[in-house]
Image 1 (spheres, rainbow, N blue to C red):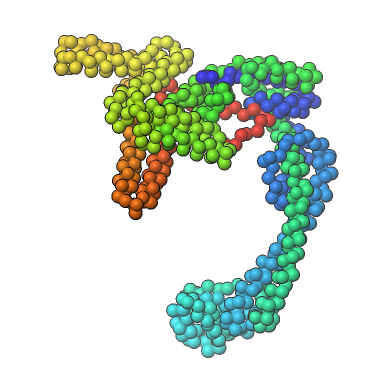
Image 2 (image 1 turned 45 degrees about the vertical axis):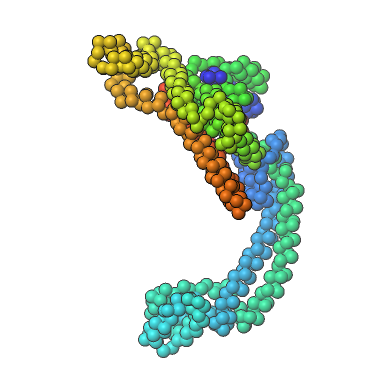
Length: 618
């Protein structure tokens, strides 16, 4: 559990005639993380022959799914024959393409009518017919809007250019609609004047072909639109019928073709000779024997399978192995970084300490029940966040248990707790300090084990145990100083000697960089005081809300509604803080104070060929 799944590297070699069967069996087994072959003295394999046809059909099916707005998320993967799929897709494509095209024509016609009616509405205000804006060799025409303040200035400038123009304006608040007709020989000068007036031109191309009064034309277009509406409803109904008729089939076919495409592309990661192929893959050690047997059976015994030794610096993919009850806590490990193959998996450790720290800080029966129900509801609403909400539900149970220990329900104390947080601050501080000492030093122990494995016993002793000796030296110096009250007293010698030993060990293990890290170690331990501080902040806010509510309640009936509002808002705000602060501070204590003692991360995710990626919040 505390180590990732053990992996083996397997080499499979066989004739190209058996490659398709090997690929199919690897995909079915869903345990092989394929190592991509880099072209060297051996070439890359070509994709399976079926890939071209599969890819073509897949594009067509996805296009149909998009056109019919069908989701394939709930589809079940089934097996089909490519010839059957090709045969059935053709009529579906014909039906769908036909209805989509007809619907688009109707929608375009409807959109055009809406645009024409909008333009005609403006022309009706100007009392100008649309045919007036048809192209002419003698007259240039404009229609659009300018600021009302610019109209008079525009008229003056136009008059200076030519007397052959007509300007029609209609004011609408601060904007003036205008229609301008002028001699085409001065079109360039007029264009400059309009630009200076910040003229916004209206596109009337959609109505230039129409003739008549705008009001009459609008009425005709409305009648035409009324005829289009039932036709569009009919096409939409037919479109929905097609989606219902073919939806399940297309979604299942898309799953099948996606699988076949994945199989078809797989050989691009294989090595190749003229007659043979070879592929290397990582397989969980517990599955190696069964994989060997299944592949040999699929290939009719015509392949060779061998295990290869894992390199020390090899990027072996990581598959976390934790009991089902702890699986949700892998969320935090993935959020930080997967461990390297030879590192410890911190999931199990966080599964114990994160809820413990969260409960210690929140520690209220009422708050814990509210957050438990809240996260249970969110888990049902947002399945992708199931793991995260499971963690917070467990943490809420921890908060309830600590609430019984503290005797707190929404900040009230219905019974006498074992620890009274508002009074026993020293006890809380001691507990927080002990938690820091235990977790930090446990991290150093794990670090010692890893360092010993990779760099030998003496390096591990100096680099990790040296920090523990430093802590002991600091404690001894503190106790001796309490006796002698003088750092330079003879009685302080044992403490200074122990400190010298610690410094020597750390210098040998870490080099001079241990000096700035010395303060960091003690700051990390002191950092656990936040467990007490965040918890006290929560309880004092709750007490303050309750005192304010009680004060308002006793002022008389007029203040009762305000007291209720203050109670609800105050505790809602405190619960929100009670979720955010303990979560963030607990995560920080693990990632910064704990992980840095033994954990580097940066592992590569185990992605078995053929397995579907699970959706999550990450």
